[in-house]
Amino acid sequence: MNDHTPEQPAEIVARLRATFRSGHTQPVEWRTNQLRRLREMLTTHGADLAEALHADLGKSSTEAFRTEIDFTVREIDHTLDHLAEWLRPEPAPVPAHLGADATAHTQYDPLGVVLVIAPWNYPVQLLLTPMLGALAAGNAVVVKPSELAPATSAALARLLPRYLDTAAVAVVEGAVPETTALLAERFDHIFYTGNGTVGRIVMRAAAEHLTPVTLELGGKSPAFVDRGADLSVVADRLVRGKFLNAGQTCVAPDYVLTDPETARALEPEFVRAVERLFGAEPREAAEFGRIVNERHFDRLSALLDSGRTVTGGATDRATKYIAPTVLADVDPTSPVMREEIFGPILPVVTVADLDEAIAFINDRDKPLALYAFTESDATRARLAAETSSGGLGFGLPLAHLTVSDLPFGGVGESGMGNYHGRYSIETFSHRKAVLEKPLG
Ligand code: NAD
Image (cartoon, rainbow, N blue to C red; front, top):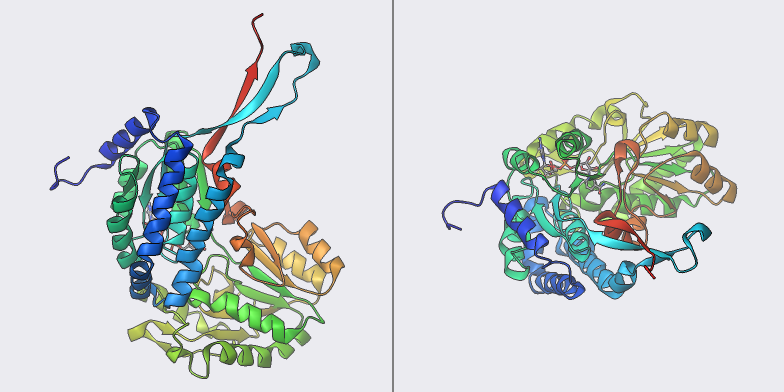
């Protein structure tokens, strides 16, 4: 390779495919070694990555470690602890007509060359977690970080080749033209995280080669608050979940759904909860992030008129600051309710009762997450049975995605497929059916 001409997508894929076909990525020792090297990269250069995340998103170092760097390290450790067990062939009972000496089992085969396309909001975690799953499953991987988090993209492009086996892992930086060029190549799996519009572009490109896709998309995740819930606890947990990363979290509670009385009682609790978490002036709080760019800042600013401001509302375009904001008296047809908010604005919408709440949820796209705060077993059971969402969280937003043994992914408009822990192995492997009948 000539140092001055960047390697073209076709060359990268051909090179990685040759590596894959040589069997290089198959041995479990190679896989675990890659995971250990990645762990070393994260522990040695955690501060560099945190700095890049601060430059891109105003993320505090504490948040960068908690939600991105340490999160990924935990996923590595969990995978290293269980990989051998997850890869073990599973015997299957054989029907009598094949004879008593026949046996059958399933075996996990790696797929080949995987493409991972990541977004800007958790640009470390959402690139590395799928990548490490693909490596653990024995694949070669091309990763494409988001151009909208340029400092993090540059840091990953610099660090990953220093730690991982470049015969099997390639980083391609770039925006639409570079991603479009990559998508023209034949991959064995494409793992995309981002919005549904691009998700459709990815799926169309994949269809050309019959390549399977995982689409980790977003949407409006509701938070239902039942009568009788402890509203101080509810407000506290909603504020923490919603305003993490300035609301730019795919599983953030998008809006609150509750009865009018509870909505009124929640208002002072939200004011207190925001102040408890960020102080009287959230602008000064190290723990409160900024909006990724002017385009999103302008889009979000236009949503602030969709209701009566309970708390927040302040903005500053120069620093891309939007205060943690709660809106009351929000009409379900107002602009803030017509798109995924993906920013620090929490509208409260009222419904008469649980029946109406369930109808409200089911009348809309299937969300990535549904949250509910209730003391009632019957309400929990009804929400679990009568609604569909990627994940369901009772009492605590976001937390389900930190449980490595739960599949993480959407359904319907919020995506298809899932990953984390053993589910990453399922996603990035082919489960091959094997039958054995002795010749004798
Ligand atoms: P983004 O703009 O960074 O785009 C994601 C990726 O798509 C980037 O790598 C980008 O280069 C690429 N891309 C953009 N346009 C493209 C095109 N025309 N062709 C090919 N590739 C293209 O991120 P985003 O989409 O703004 O991310 C926010 C969305 O992602 C929200 O909807 C959020 O809910 C969702 N999200 C989902 C998850 C999840 O795990 N389900 C996680 C984070 C974000």
